[in-house]
Length: 107
Image 1 (cartoon, one colour):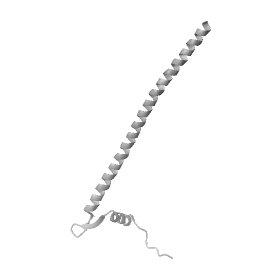
Image 2 (tube, one colour):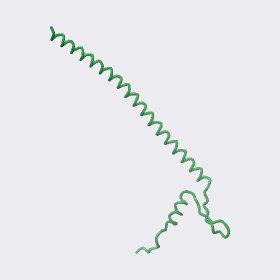
Image 3 (cartoon, helix red, strand yellow):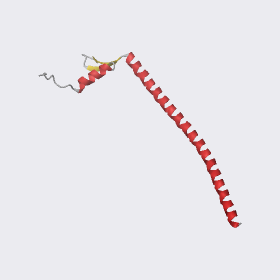
Image 4 (tube, one colour):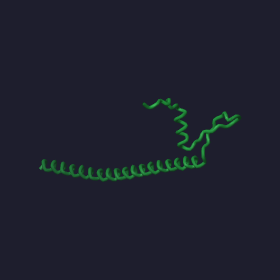
């Protein structure tokens, strides 16, 4: 049987999480009673670089999405203009046929 060593508390799990991202806990002040957190300079640099990369990635994704939508709307607009012309020609031809049939009925 495995001996029970007690359950992990939130403090234990948060301490491991802080260590994994480069933040170390220390004590400062008179008698080393006040808690302090030490953040390494390279950790700050990594955070800034990753944040800038993420923002750049989002900007690229949004830019390409807007560009695709613009291209599609232009293509749709050109298609609708062509469809309008074809529709007008069909209506014109139908109107001419109707006039011709009325004229032939009169004769």
